[in-house]
Length: 168
Image (cartoon, rainbow, N blue to C red; front, side, top):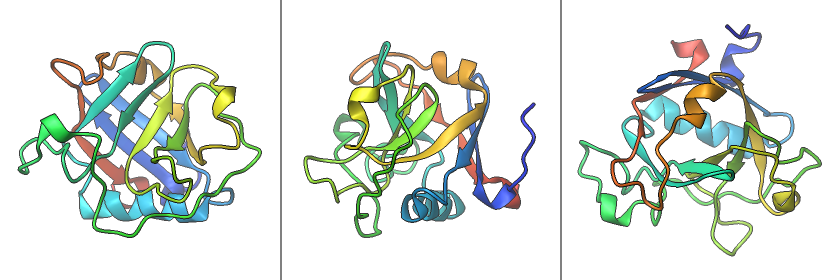
């Protein structure tokens, strides 16, 4: 079990196979860390599917508009939506896209990240300086590794719940 030293900057994601603990890098990407806390506290990430999962690359989720099972989400459109909050400015840093880091998904526009994010399965340094890194998995990477692959997966895994550790 990972020791949670900063509960306000720690996210707990419950997957079907177990718990994933994410340390937010609020000193590196404060806007993105705050957005994840906000959406977690709103319950927006609960039951959202992993809509794009590529072997050896990453697992993408966070489409709170279209990817929410049980809240009227349109899974055929999962990956095309965002949240009711405005898009975020890029917060590029020297933190590399290593295995287990959390990156902000976006369109071609660097300042278009909103609610979607991805977890790197491997070191993806070709993404460095192009996508904001704002967290890292500190416990439960084996559960991330078990997420069903596909674009989209036939029977997608989902985040059962996402909470800020300070609130759990």
